[in-house]
Length: 260
Image (cartoon, rainbow, N blue to C red):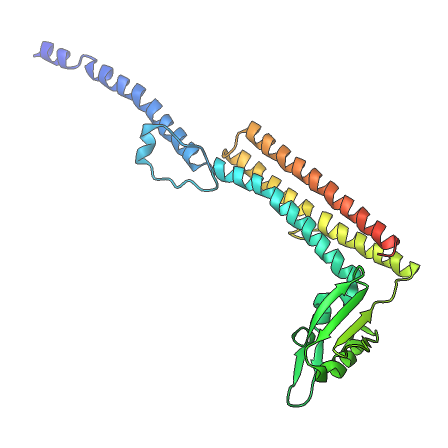
């Protein structure tokens, strides 16, 4: 009887349990590691077959989407330069731009009401935007158009003696002091499009994208080398378009100083 008990008490159970513990510990570690990779924002694909049982949702952009973001930054920088040129052109023309002339409200006879000048005449800019030529569609409206233009921009329109439907507006030449003031305005616009917190400034676009790239690097969506390479590309494009913006400002200042 005791010999039977001693056979049962042999450490067979211990040999059975010990190997199971040894196998289960690495399995648990592997499952944790795969989950950690899967949960990384924008993390790379996990090839561990044990991860198939896990349904963690991978958030954030993948590598291809990040490449697309970096590639698209040049278009944003280019658009900023274009918006700078549009804005400075508007400032240089002041109230005499074709768009603003066209927006002048013209009170007509009581039965016709008030209409925008653009609906009453064709508008042309000539002589480096120093001369505005209006061709009024209806000769009855000429007197209303000339009166409204004078009231709006303070310049007296001249009616062509050979054709009463043609009205010419000559913009006075700027004085030296006016040119200096205008150059100050151009530099103000340059700073706005170069360094301001506006979402359209070169600096904002650069800093915003680099911030996200570094975030993706920390989350594991990008390797350290990839992060550095993308940041360098953004800096390269930023430097390129900063130079372009500066060159445009110099050209504008030169034009203003020469009376254009």
